Image 1 (tube, rainbow over the protein chains, first blue to last red):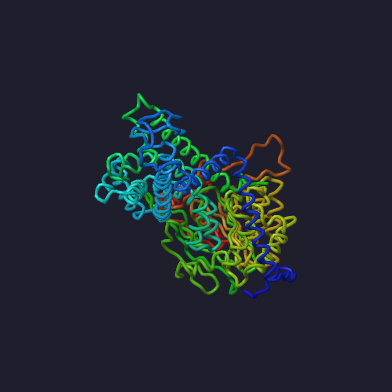
Image 2: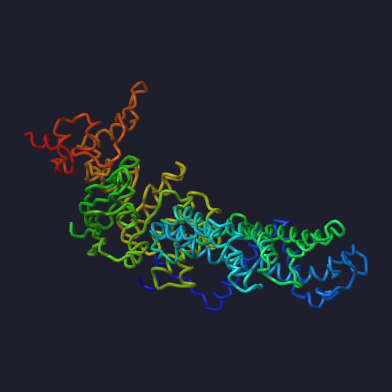
Length: 308
Length: 328
């Protein structure tokens, strides 16, 4: 192959490197803009994203914006919203609900997002490998995962967390391990179906190597359902993390995440229902927001939704 | 016959299934000369596509090329490593698929996909590759190629996508183009355009082409040579004019007979070959066509038919033809 091949003697148009760089940047920028437009078409996704940004900011800024120390009793036990100057009232020990929600967000977001993202990354590698290679490799990988799959998610996490010292790191690790089989299954199934698409064979006929096919053909085409599934798991994992903490395997009192706050509220459920209702409400809203963002991401990743 | 770019010698591609061994291609031999067009004709399931996949070494388990030789120029394709084969695919041998709607990666732009092939096989990169992509798109008749470079496959019609796939297949000016029923999924009006384009491109590049089709009209318009397949086996092979004028194998005769002719009277019934082709799973010895053959006799069920160089210039694989040739 000479370096200036031409089918009908027409010479190649020369462009400078700077021009090319600018053009590449322009194409990237255009793709991003189009992706954002596709995302922005989903109003719920935009609202959810804004909401989540605010929630994350609050969690990060908790030490500075919390009106009170979240572990210190500042009001009456189970004080209703408004009493003792506490906007959302006090919990069973008279601690400021608002401050506890702010601080609790740090842990809850961490154990919702980090294990899900980590487990998705691991599952993508495992599922892609098993699904694409197929045969006995597929059998071995998936049967090993099936062993994990046989345990209920929470039970598996309890077993793992039980072996380790309690703490946030333990929570994250145990939930990650427990999640991997679930997401791997989805990744594998989608990979197997994408693998049979004619464009994969066409790519091979075009001389594409296996790494190229995996990275540019299989991965991007199987990612959408995985993202949607993973984002719905985030909310669930916040609750699972709280369950582990409730059993003494996760974060320790007086620290709290939203889920622990819900369970703490049980003690005063009749007298002070708000102590359970507020954190529960926050979990629901934040979980929903992550799902909406997932839907929006799917649209942004889909070229068909990206048009104009 | 010395300038053959491709020689296929007694190719046998079998699939090991639970029900037995499916002999998808069973004893196929042909030669392809530079700049010539070979049409492989046959019914669905006759092994046409498997032949193409075998040449590209794209056969996946449980399929396997169990026997035979495929020689590209001086290289034995079956002896190459997968790495060497990847260098060859899309570079020296380009392939065009049946369904343009699903043969392009939906998540990348047309430009990226053409450039990918160019970058993989040539020293071109960046702006040169992009300029080359534009040039190719213009060559295959895509209007405003610069603007369409950043469009996604779903923004193209079926005909335009097939043009894109042709552009990708010819990006490296291959020695051989393999087109596997390239017009089957297209509207009739587009079919002629695509065939003309293929023909133009093939002539311009001087490539040899294997065109797989079940449309005898396409064969008569495009082919230099024809290879008729039936149930994984070769039936008749030869120059297109020879075979159309003087089909020798009863199957070829039946195929050509089933074409409607303009001067047929309206009342005359459409002729067809009765019955269905057998599925070649553990086929019994003898000719695969014998149950549907008007000329079948005892020998056809006992022995595999011989290769007969006919007096009319084609090669037929048939006991009846052998008997005809032997008779004075």
